Image (cartoon, rainbow, N blue to C red; front, side, top):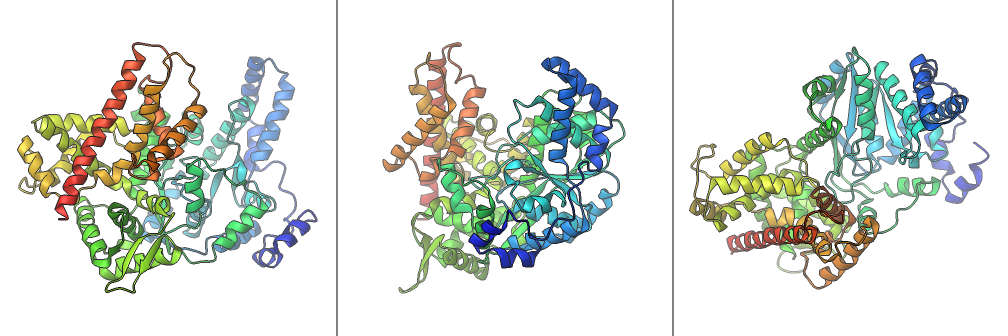
Length: 619
């Protein structure tokens, strides 16, 4: 064992487990100073020429810049060795022991055939630290060439880093804006991996979601990959979106606390040991789905004349990840209980879940494990599992057993509900569009305009296809409301819209969108109250939103404390910036901020209308 480890490992009582798992083996010798890809980059005359140009631009000595770049490359360098890969597989199995991994072998078989022809790029959703263990393990254990995993440098934790570097983990710094030499070295390193037909794996979100739904994408790695393909003519790369969703996770309470402004614990040996020990309790299944692949080169050719190409591909990738993400029993049970805001019997939970299950079936949405969400045993097992983990509290001493959200667990339940929120967003938008049509005493034209307006309002929180494709999807969504239309959307009136809403089940807009639009309300209110000519500071503004949001939650001006979250305020602020409402000055900013506030309040009023209809349907 490395002498540096002895005191720390012994203080934690971790030595027996870590020795058994092979983590404390002496390394197989030092990692070669230049792995194959690093050596190839350093020997590339084109790389040297780029460094010389950069040195001239920066006004620095070329030799100094070359030495700095070589140091960065060796910091990134990774490889796959047999022993390290074997040892890491054992340790990662121990880390992920709380879950049974469910994966469709047919998907893996199709990828094995594609693996022989090109680099496979695996951008994955990120709900847990376990994703970085689960996804590469699923790739290599199913006969696909092992991937190089692009991981945050915050996970460069001794002593595990010596295993991970030899298991294909490339540690990447997160803040590189002031490191031009580092950015060039990373770009060229990724380009070399692509030229060598290596597979890559990374989190498309850049960090874990704190709300349960997919976060806005991080463009950095994808931009480097696009640059690499653009600099060559022969290499091919296939984007394979990856979704990972869990029935439950041990780390959710910590993440929801961070979303409300809490501090994040630094990743070190003590943290990793505590995280590993927390996985002792079984927590159900983890579902990994490979989404529909897309040829990156073909997509780049299609977008040759477009702007913001990387951003468009990233958003499309996230949309594909959502399409692949199945709905879990945990998600629908939490949705039902959050909607009721009281304890329910099993039959009452089933009464809420059954219309959702029928809707999912009509829309062809995947359900995790192909479970029957209308089956009593399925829902009963989910209720009991959530009760055992403390998310729910059950009571069986009366005439019927009931379950409700446990005290202090509403944000955790909301996290699980939000893992399925993407499948209900179009339905929610359709309900709001019909409500607008009723208010304007109009039909299809008003509903279509309102749906597109809502898409633009929510586009920083949810992932939508291009406007034309979205219009087709909304037409299909509204056609479901008309059971006499044969699946086709025809012209309709305000009376039709009122009839569809009164008889339509499930009504979900208030359940799906209220937490997000309440957060938008706080942001819009604070923007409208801000002085037009004062400098805008994001951190100070978001802190004010947290303070006012907590006040509103106490006053019951918000539907739940879930809306008091940096993860929800930030997209609203991003929308405001996109609309030119943040930068002081410009044409009538105070008037436009007030108009934004009125717009949000109008939608909230319509959500109240839908909530009243939903309550009336339940008697």
